[in-house]
Image 1 (tube, rainbow, N blue to C red):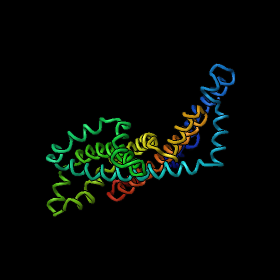
Image 2 (image 1 turned 120 degrees about the vertical axis):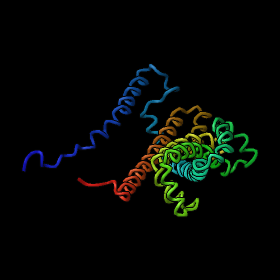
Image 3 (image 1 turned 180 degrees about the vertical axis):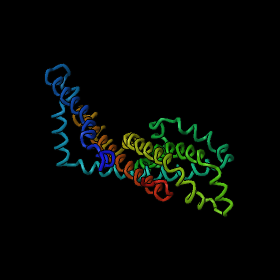
Image 4 (image 1 turned 30 degrees about the vertical axis):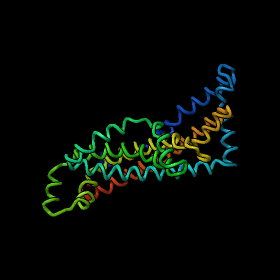
Length: 268
C-alpha cells in the first residue's frame, strides 16, 4: 500500500476548540491583576474571583429560578416570532402583491427600538407574562422574516413552476419545495433571531419582572452591586452560546440529511 493510498489522518479538533478559550482566560487574568493592583476601583469593577463567588452563591439559591423564568420566556417568544416570520416570509417571498402591501409597514416596524415597545405593551397587555413574551417575539420575527424572504427569492423558480404544474397547493408547496430549498437562509435567520431574543429578554424583564436574569441585572444596578450585574451578564452569555450551539448542531444535521436525501452527499 502506497503512502497516497493511506487514509488521511484527521487533525485533532480539541486544540482548535481550546483556542477559543484563550482570549477569555487572558482577559480574566489581566482583569484580576488590574483590579488587585488598584488601577481600577473595586466598587466599579469587581475581580473575576469575586464574580465567581457571586455565581456560586446564586447557584445555591435563586439562580436556577431566574434561569428557568428567562429561558421559558425566550423559548416561547422565539417560537412565536419565528413561526410568524416563516409564514409571512413564505407569503411575501412568493407574492409581489403581498410584498407591496406588507413590506413598507414591516420596514417601519423593524426600525423601532426594543425599549420603545415597552410602554405600549404595558398599556395593551399589562405587566404579566404576555407582554414579555410578545416583546421577545417581536425581536425574533424580523430576522426570520428578512432571511426567509431572501432565501425564497433565491430559489430556482423552475422548482416552483414544476410544483405548481403538479398541483401543489400553498401549504404543500411551502412544505415540500420552499422550506427544503430555503433551509440555509432560514437557519441563518433563526440563529440571528435567537440572539435577538436574548437581547430583547433584558428589555422584556424590565416590565415589572420579579424573576429572570434581566431582573438580576436591574437588582444589581439598584443595589450598586457590579458583581451581581456581571454574574447575570455571564449567565446570559453562556445561555446564548449554548442555545446557539444547539441550533447550529440542528442546522448541520438537517443540512446533512437534506444533502443525503437529494443524493448530493456522495462518497468517493
